[in-house]
Image (cartoon, rainbow, N blue to C red; front, top):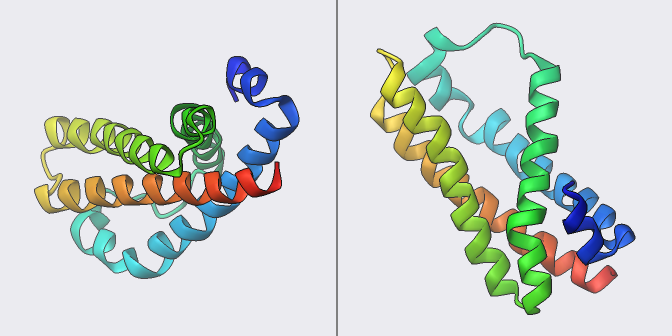
Length: 143
């Protein structure tokens, strides 16, 4: 987590918020990836998927992305005392982050389907907004 996020939230609140955000993110994203959209991604980009997950890279992504949610969405929401800000900033951060991934793939890969870009952008926006909102709500009641 960025140092100024921890300092402005207080180290205990920042670490607690990070942990809460991680739990909420994993709970929602694992249902999406493992159940809801599992066949969607296999159907549309299965030929690009590795048979084995690179868990080191996956865990590093989650650690960095969750820090981004805390820093760019939840921290400003705490500063404003606004769950709506967590939702809006979470949506913006999710859209930008997922657009970076999906539009880069769209631009550089010959077999990247437009449908995957559209669905993934929508998912990243909704996921990150929801996680930021719920994490703000839970954290603000605990800390």
